[in-house]
Amino acid sequence: MKATIEFDEEKMIRLLAKGSEYAFAKIFERYHGRIYAAALRILKSREFAEEVVQEVFLKVWSRRIAFADVKNLEAFLVTCGRNLTIEFFKRRNRE
Image 1 (cartoon, one colour):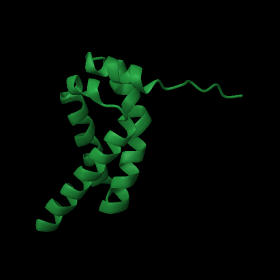
Image 2 (cartoon, rainbow, N blue to C red; image 1 turned 180 degrees about the horizontal axis):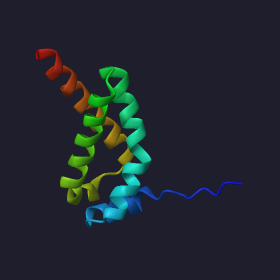
Image 3 (cartoon, rainbow, N blue to C red; image 1 turned 45 degrees about the vertical axis):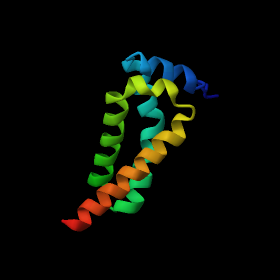
Image 4 (cartoon, rainbow, N blue to C red; image 1 turned 120 degrees about the vertical axis):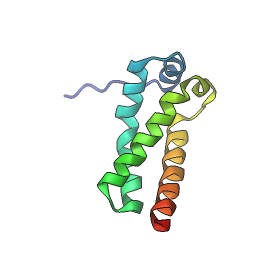
């Protein structure tokens, strides 16, 4: 039987806001796949989808102090990923 470890989103947000690399890694581990898959569906490029994921988590880390006010981390990250994917898609089409 596989043991499941509960993910305490509120605790991870608090730790992230304090600069915890552990919390950042756990958040990345939990949500990067969903953001990547959504970006890949739109961009049709693994390389570009990976860039979107990197941009999302770069923003997360650089703005970590502001995350103390985030109530639903998953919704926030998915929305951020979607917005960056759309921006990336528009940029790519202009080029």
